[in-house]
Amino acid sequence: MKSNTMTNETDDNVTRDDLLHGELKLWQHRHGYRYSVDALLLADFAMELARGARVLDLGTGAGTVALILAARGKVERMVGVEVQEGLARRAEQNAENNKTNPPVEIVRGDALEMASRFGPSSFDLVVTNPPYRELGAGKPSPHPERAIARSEVKMSLGPWLAAAMELVGRSGGVCLVYPVDREARLMRVVEELGLFIARRSYAIDRPGGARKLVLLDLRARACPTSDLAEVPIETDDGKFSLDGYR
Image (cartoon, rainbow, N blue to C red):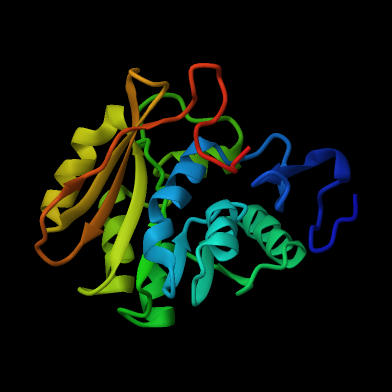
């Protein structure tokens, strides 16, 4: 496997995985943070808002959601932001190797710096799969890349969502995915920030099964909440229910 923009990593540490039935190829660290169904659900949930929009993926990881939206969302612009150097390098490689239209732009930096970098209200849509474990809550992953991606090592949920909302202002939206077992905390933060839920959906493990993830479409302006149908993560025969993702 050719390693275009990767540095300080051998081919043995990196896998090349199919995404969208091979439409996209994703380079990922074998033992680091890897995309999961969260990213696929988030991309699907945000797809209808992405058309013709300026979109920013906050905490893009290896670029999974950004690549899907750039390939299928008919976006005007697609930017992925990642603070971790290793993940940002892989996102840059994935953006280079997958010729989406428009191409995915990768920015290395902290989420709190993005409004000053791009300007407030500079995007129509932010998508994000924020770290969900509070510091001290449970045992963090021994792998630093996974620990930072999943736990609030760099930033807590409130400032993260506030930064996302500043990027879209009062006319845009923020779509996020979060574990159901931490939904009460998420809702407290949403209320504290004075945000409104435009759309809400739950991902269940299988048809008729338990809720695992909640997806929210947040706005700064008051709006009615549309509760969408629950999305089974897997069908009864164990296959992903989202068409085209595996």
